[in-house]
Image (cartoon, rainbow, N blue to C red):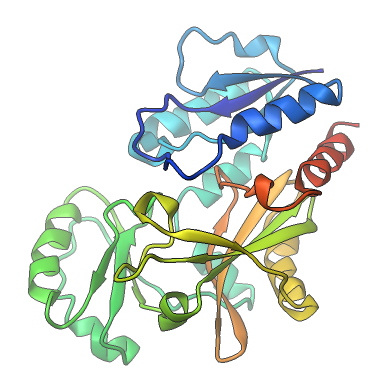
Length: 291
C-alpha cells in the first residue's frame, strides 16, 4: 500500500521552535515498519494523488486560512477515490466549530458557546452577564493556532467589539466564557488512535498569556490522567470519531467534570514524543484500519 502523509507548505506561521518535527518522526517510524509513506503538501498542484491508496491527513496547518480551497480539495480527493484518514465526512464536519452543537445535543459536556453569524453586529460587553463572568473568549468558527482569538474583559470590551465586528463581515465567530481552569491548571489533550486511548498531556500557557499553543510560549507536561477522565474523554471519540485513525480531545476539568474545548480530528499535533509507546499505538491503529 502506498500512503501519502498530508502536510502543508511551512512558512513558519504555525510551527514553534520548541515543537519537534513530528511528521519526520512519524514517517521514519512507519518506514521502519515497512510501510511506504511519502509526505505531500495538500495544495501542491503537482502531486499525483491517484498513485496513493490512502492519504493520512497529518498536518495541513494552514487549512483554515484557505478553507474554501481545503473543502474543494477534500471533494476532489473523494472523486479520485483516494481513501482519507480521517474520513472525508468527519474532516468537513470538524472544520467548523458548529460541530459543538452536535456534541452538546448528544448529551456530552462542551464549553458553553454562542454563535455569531457573519454580518451580525455585537456588543461584547453583553456576554459578561450572559455567561456570568468577566472574561470571555471570542474566535472564528473556522480557525486554528489561536488565530483571531481574543480574551475580552470589561476593560478591553469596546476595543475588541470594534475589531470583532470588522471580522464578522467576513466570517462567523463564537463567544465562550473564559475557563479560568485552563489558565490556573492547564488544558488536557487526550490522544486516541483507532478509538483506543494512547497518552495524554497537560498544556499550560506562558505567564500573562491565555493561549496554550507552543507558538505563544505554552508548555507541554507529561501527565497521567485518571481512568475516570480517560473514560469521559473516550465518550467524545466513541460518539463522533468513528473509523478515525486519530482523535485529540482537548478539555478542561471544571468543578470536577471534564468539559470539551475542542475535538481535534483534522490536523492536531499528536505529542508523539511524549510517550514511548505513542508511535507503536499509532502504527497498530493504522494496521487495523488498512487490513
